[in-house]
Image 1: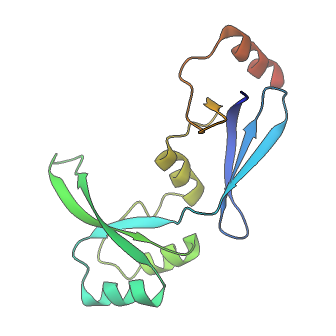
Image 2: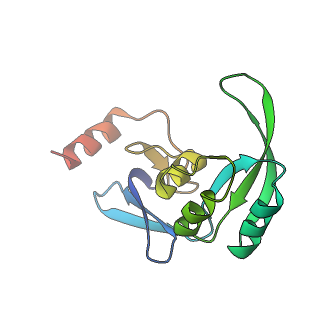
Length: 145
């Protein structure tokens, strides 16, 4: 099995996420995920204008529960998904309050997937490997000298 180091995440011209990863041979591999959609969180329930914005821009919504980090209270929010990041940014201006809209889509993707820049990930499921052997660490350091 080949393990990979996450180097970068970028948005492609088709609004997919392209991950750049370094393999054990020192070659860069790319993985493209076109299934994820940008989103932001907003107050729930949506008012009539916000519902119209979701329809107009072909958004989709799901209801989620989050803990407010400042108060510790559980809050019911709407997670609104959009066809692409530009539409998400444009739509956000028409909502009363939004969260996570200011986060760059590729960085949001990396965070949501639990990936870590510069860390070793398993090739099979792209999960971070928390412990790195001395040999693997040396190979990584040699790659960037």
